[in-house]
Image 1 (cartoon, rainbow, N blue to C red):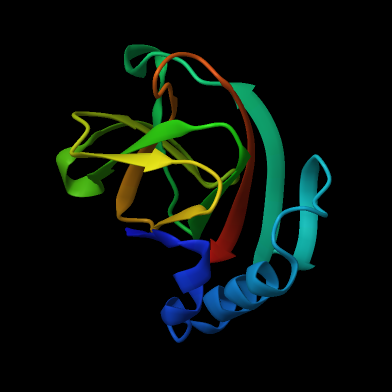
Image 2: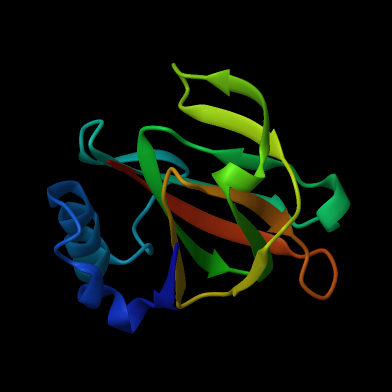
Length: 149
């Protein structure tokens, strides 16, 4: 897991070619021009999903993880917490390899506050619990960069 500010994202170049592509794109374009749904950057190696939702109480949110992609979480609007726990402390309930989605449950080890300007990168070893309300339910506009690892 990496938690930083957008202005410091360049420090994380060198983690891999696809991560460099994602970071270069974000530093050059940000999230302002993204359309809802999938936004292409480099085919299935790097793409960005733009979507929105209303945050919810932690007990209603669901953990997920991915085997083939790292996620770079960025908020364009709103605020939330994202819970993160290492996969080795989680119980896996289902795996959909085609969708690269691992559903799991367990305790939240770290609760990361997200707002515009913050960046959270989670890797395959990081289960993450998104959409957790921070001070009550709010509307969130979000981008998640999917980076093949």
